[in-house]
Length: 267
Image 1: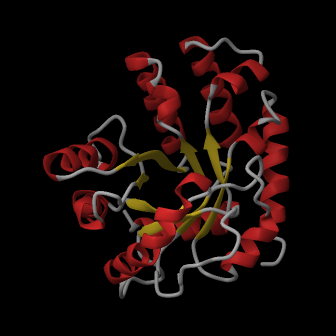
Image 2: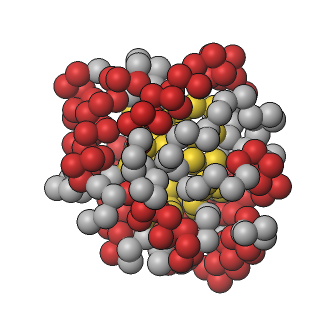
């Protein structure tokens, strides 16, 4: 396989720069006329797979919405991952894991190991026990051609103070790890579309940038262009603002196509 960074750029070139967040929370299941149980979860994910697998650059399931149903919910997540990857669609699992020692080793094996039923192309990770503590995930990404997106400046307003104090150090650490990668490295950051003014220098990152907060949280395609300009590997993520077009598959595809065109308007 090719490293995650180049594979991501190729997927974005082929399908446009849209990451579809699959967040089956209670309110959305009800909006779709589905029950808030494993059966409803399974129906929701099957619709999402039919609508977006093979048509979106990246699909990003939020693990918590599957974990809340225990092992049965995890089984649904495994099926979603398998369905997406069978079409060649990149899967970014939003798990925000971050720990030390053997615990981080286990997380890395669970989500980036090719033998794991939860194995995906990339994960999100939390750096607040130290970026160096994430080394098992970085090593697994190098070994298995995966990617890791580390939280830097998220769309969560409650985290702004601590994140702004640490973000540049996180970016600089990852920039060193990505140094020399061509066209970009596989270690990226998460920077929200709702941060206002960009208080961190991303020009040396040489890695992908996941941009949540577009849509329901108030971020717009114009914000993405203003904040990130022509930096490579900028991947806007949309969940609620797109999924509200469901449960009709054609409606979901049309909404995704419209948003993709809007995000690519100045390219």
